[in-house]
Amino acid sequence: SGLALDGGSALAIRPLATTLDAAKTQTWTVTSLSGEGTNRHRFTLQNGSGQFLASRGTATALVDADPAAAAADPALQWMASTTDGTYYSVLNVAAERVLDVNGGSTTSGAAVGLWTSNGGGNQQWRIASTSVVGTEPVTVATAVGVAPTLPASVSVRYVGGTVRQAPVTWQLDGVDISRPGAVEVTGTGTELFGGSFEATATVEIGAYTATR
Image (cartoon, rainbow, N blue to C red):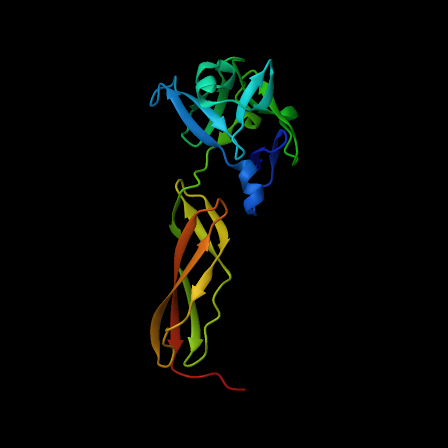
């Protein structure tokens, strides 16, 4: 559906976050428990508020627990399997059922529960890292002596290839635009999940000024 697993007040699918507050409910911390590197890998999932994703019977729940309790309770433990290395089904150890968007819905706010694994698209999840690896290059042009117009946001790249937009502040102090050529301008910002990043823009300075 292209929607994200959201662990706010209840487990549901929602549009990809575009603000820090919204990103908090869509950020999940994976903590390995055992079997890492095998098809029996067990782990826990915590939302941005520190609550653990758990099963309660055949339903999902967000619960408060300490890590030791989570490591000992199969209801708070999960296992993932994949056939293509991109999309995963996520199985609850206690319930022996997988995360499932109710009714195969693609509507924002649709609840996410547990169901017997059937390989359906509503049981397939893509895990996207929040670790930044860099930003996409920026190139702009300006005339001699004219301050360049730089973008207010840049494309931030994450581990795994996901790209998201983030606002950037450019440092123009000391940049010489008095002669033709190319100069680099550095920028900094805070991306959607609270991490800082640096960006670089190449400014190509033309030989002529603009006139009316």
